[in-house]
Image (cartoon, rainbow, N blue to C red; front, side, top):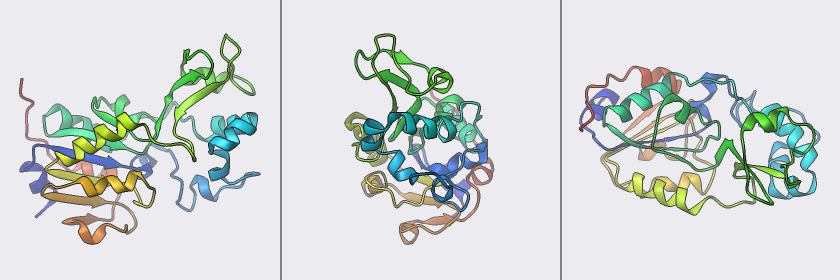
Length: 241
């Protein structure tokens, strides 16, 4: 059965995506040859992006964060746009993403579970005041609130747990899906990758450049660019009023 045929006969599609979904928007992933994990800094990215490092060396954290984690000018690519179209047509019920770039929302998707948070939300650790990401980008050193408190991005750092409400929503969506499209992720990062075990639907599709530990479980495996694959889908449904 082709991807198009699976989409045609499904009405509760859930999309689970990782960094590979955004590479076509010019955002590097973490594990490819030219990804963040292979670039040279004084500390490994895993160390810099940890809660311990954020607490102990916030100025160094923000130097890296501004340089590599704030692609505010990036625009949605064909994958993001097609998923928004599928949701509008009443075919797709939710997106579960490991990305923090906010591109699914920018593309028009409404039901998005951001497992690792978003760079578009930032709050003072003292008083809770909200700040736009441009404030973080344009500040110097450690971004401070008007009350003097340190501002923290709403992104899940290493050593931090996922948001319970977000995880619960993602699990509910995946459990109720009749088709799960998993794309642009190595499926090696837990607990996020473990969410796949809640899928009880009919069609499991994996779209990723490289093989994943779940390839043998999938009905269809496609080793191509996510945007190119998804953009080929014809959307025939119309959203019910």
